Structures are given as C-alpha cells and as structure tokens.
Image (cartoon, rainbow over all chains, first blue to last red):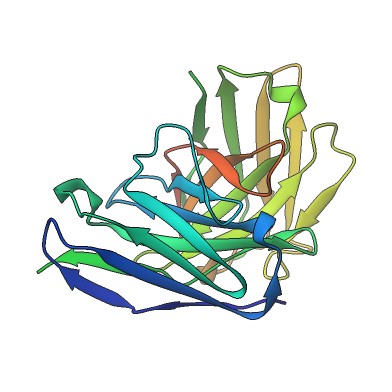
Length: 108
Length: 119
C-alpha cells in the first residue's frame, strides 16, 4: 500500500503570500492518479487538482500542482482569505484511494 | 447541478447495524463509479468503498471488509452502504463521492452524514 506523507503539518502564512505544500509517496505514483483537495471546517472536500497538475472546473489559476514519481507539490501563488483551510493529497492505485494526512494552512 | 445527499446516519451501539443512503441528481448516475469516504472527528480522510457504474466491480478498505456492503440502484439514482458489526472506530462523517470518468479522483462530494458508534 502506498503511503502519502504531507508536509508541513501546519503552515502559517499571511494573505498575499505564496504557499508551497508537499506530498511525498512511499513509492512511485502515476502522475495521472495524483490529486489535491481543499476542505474547510464543516464542509466536504473540494477537488482542486487532478492528474498532478490539471485544475478542476472553477478552480482559480492561483492554484497549481506539479511533481512526479514520489514528490508532488501544491502551490498557491498569492493567498486569498478564503484559501485558509486543510489540504489533502490523494493517489489511486490497486483499486483504492489513499489520502495524505493533510496540511492545515492557517492565517499568521 | 450535481448533487449528492447522504442520509441514514445516527447513533448506534457497538455491534449494531446502520444503512446509509446517497441520493444523486444532476448527472447520469448510471455512468459513474461511486465511493464512500469517511472522516473521523478531527481526523483525515479515509476511503471506505467503491462500486463501478454497473456494480460489476466492488472494492473495500481492509478496515471494513467483511462488515460493510456497498450497493447501488441505478433506477433510483441511489448509492447505499450497509454497515454491520459497527465499532467505536467507525465513528465518522461518511461522504458519498462521485469518481471522475477519466481520472481516478473524486470530483463531487455530498455534505456527509454522521455515524456515531457508542454505548
């Protein structure tokens, strides 16, 4: 089973700053099967990025994904107040989905 | 507009059973694989089970295998999760989620239903 490890656990930044979130896999992951989600308190997760770098419908272009193999990154170029939330990476393999433990992006 | 609405959650004693439902609308339900994902209070996301569009392929997480059963009724645009032999560690918000047709991601999620297993 592939394990996804996200870092940092918590990231404290100010609006307008750039955020870089990391997701590392215990073994190589197909880029086609790597995604990122955003979750705000009391809400369901929302798909942000799929295929490692493709933005989902309606996602602003300040969100971007990159990476391959075992190292993937979600970048938010310029933080807006509504971006402070928990972010999860996810991979698909062996007919099941695996999520990272999440990175909490909080206002500094 | 795609909508997924879960129901059936509640308080149940350890060893008990519960059946969750997910009503889908706004898309051709019979064309999509569907999933259940859960989130324990204050914890991260855990995939529970998936079912293909025609119910031909069904998969479970090891943590629920043998206790939970996923099913669907395409005529009723509904997804189900029968949960038996419930344990305290099954306490969570349960989300139903649609799988994207071309990518192995979950592109739409319901708002979730809370299952609490406690004596």
